[in-house]
Length: 234
Image (spheres, rainbow, N blue to C red):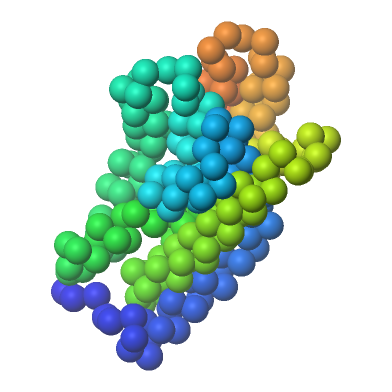
């Protein structure tokens, strides 16, 4: 099967629908990008180098990790660290593979460059009847890319001019919370998210960020128990 061209009436409509679906995430992505731009400048990049880094790397959290390690860690370790941070994209790619059946390889590489947590979440949450998911994904990805690049450029250009009192670092978790909330549609899902958050915060003193692992495990267990209880009731 060949994916319908985006320029076709249906593909064009799906493109704009995907782009519009991404709009609510823009307020969270913009300050996240600014944080990445500021981090690159603080790591020693010039504003122009920071923008080039964002254009080439385009990796969100991995950009922050690389910027924080730059100048203090061997290049090989920086590369390995960013690969580990981005391992989740292998799972994203595997789950999206059926959508790209028939898409030429060159276009797949371009679409893969644009894959982010946000564009993935918007695409996987698309309407069930969406006939052109690749065009829908492309629309979400284009707006995500533009928002991120404008955000990082703004952060890189303003750099030290941004007051330290501005709590921009909160944009990172808030951006991911904005992705999570729309997909919480059942009681087990809501309970799992709530338990995970409470446990992760309560266990924040654990080393190596083990509180996040503990919170995730407890949340999944709680959600599974409630799901099975509801099935037995049911």
